[in-house]
Length: 190
Image (cartoon, rainbow, N blue to C red; front, top):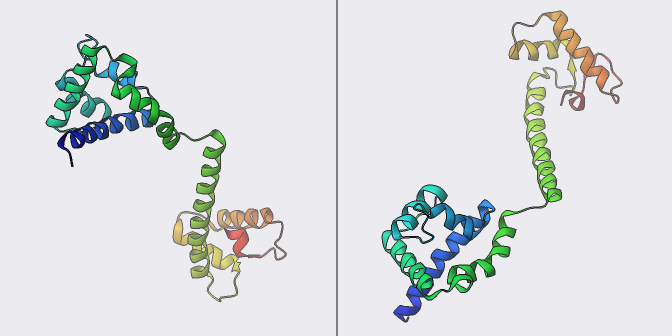
């Protein structure tokens, strides 16, 4: 390809990285510019771009890339491009797309939270069922008090028989479906 087109693509790609980072942070390009402008002169030199993007925004550019961006910013500042600058133009076209990549509605957040909680419970229940089966010595798919006591003693050796009995009985009382008040079924256990 044309070397000029390749250089333009290279610069645009660098600008897109900045736009995505701003969107991910929920900030504007102006905010990023102000943060990078260490000396407060309203312009960005190559060092402010290279070091600032790396240190403040964790965006890594090579020295050559920073020089090209600096040259672009200088050229646009001298021409008075302002709102018509390539960065602002890219920001306008990418900002909504970028923000949508990193923003979710409150409803979607709660949906994701509930999904994660369901997955967590499923993983936990699978682990609990393995423990249940391991301590169901006679394989009758319920835990007698003795089997439950053995399980608890395996986990916590300092508990007394009365404490274990209290936990066993409270657990059985909480399970409204349990018909047998001296044996714990998997649903009650999990």
